[in-house]
Image 1 (tube, helix red, strand yellow):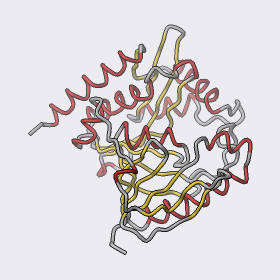
Image 2 (cartoon, one colour):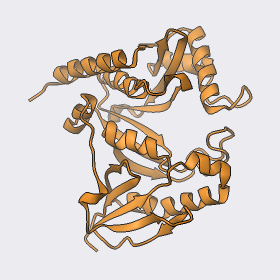
Image 3 (cartoon, one colour):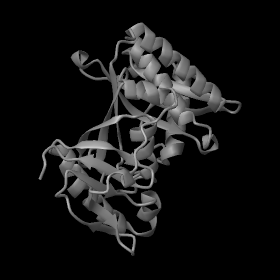
Length: 287
C-alpha cells in the first residue's frame, strides 16, 4: 500500500513530467510585481478590462501571505498562464482552486494539465487531501478535461453562483457551475495524473435514457429521466452560441439546470463525461 510520502513523490514526478512536456517552467509566485502580471494575464484571458478585474495584485499577495496558492507558467516570452487557490475549512484539508487562465499562444501545449498537476503536488505537500473548483457544465472541453483527463468527481450543482459577470466569455449568461472534487490520493486520480484518464462512452450504456438530446435545430431536446442511468447532452460550442443565439444558449442553460442540476442535487452520481458530448449520470435509486 502506498504511503502519503509515496503519493507525494509520484505527484512530483508527474508534475515535473507534465511541465517538461508543455515546454514551460511552473513556479509559485510571491512578489507583488509577479502578482500584477497575473492580474494582467487574467484580464486578457477573460477580456474584462481594468474596471472589473477578476483578481488584483494586492489580493494575490494577501492570498500568498495567508498560505494560499498562486502559480505561474513561463515560456520564452514571459508569463503565459497562471493559477490561484485558497484553503477551505481546516478540518476539510481542502484547497479551492478559484481561477486558472492561459494565453492563446499556449494552446496545444498541455499547460492546463501541467498547472493542475503542479497544484496537486503543492497541495499534497501542504497537507491537503482534495482540491475543489467550479466550471461551467455547458463547456464541453472543460467537462472532458475535469471529469475525464483529471478524473475529478462532480460534487454539487451551484445555480447562478457568481451572478451576472461582465466579461467577454460569460456575456451576462447565468453562471450556473458544477463544483468538482479532486481526491488527490484516489487511485483513479493517481492514474489520471500519470497519463491514464478516466474514459467513458455513452455507447457502453445501451439501456440509458436520454434526458437531454440535441434537436435538428441545435436546441436542447428534453427526454426521459426514468432509468437508472441517464445521458445528458451539451452543445458543441456554447461560447459561440452565446454570441450568435443568446436565446438558444439560455435554452441549453435551462435544460442542463433542469436535468443535470436536479439529478446532482438529489444525490445522483456523475459517472463521467463522454468526449462526444454526454454526461453519464447514475440515479441513486432504481425508478
